[in-house]
Length: 126
Image (cartoon, rainbow, N blue to C red; front, side, top):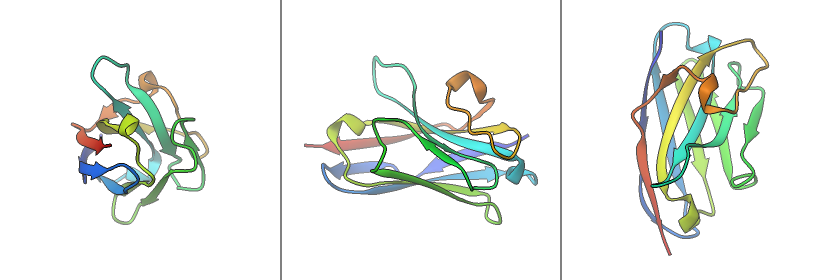
């Protein structure tokens, strides 16, 4: 079992950057793919991006491609979401999620993930 804690959210102006971290507990974190999702008020939870358990494969939602980057350090049990060129439309609560899976799989839907963090607020002002 794995527990996840997000950090790094805050208020930033449009065009700025933020770096979110997802810290995981548990000795087998390297067996889990990790995804980032976001949810704005009144909206469904949206896939932002994900990374395979070894960190070799990443996938991104269309809204963030070219602006966001995901990386992981399995020695430190951490996954990072680097967000650049932020827009007001990026304002949401951001969640990291984990799934025990095969090496090359990066799940992209909410229902595929069984472990979730509590979320961190990101607000982008215009």
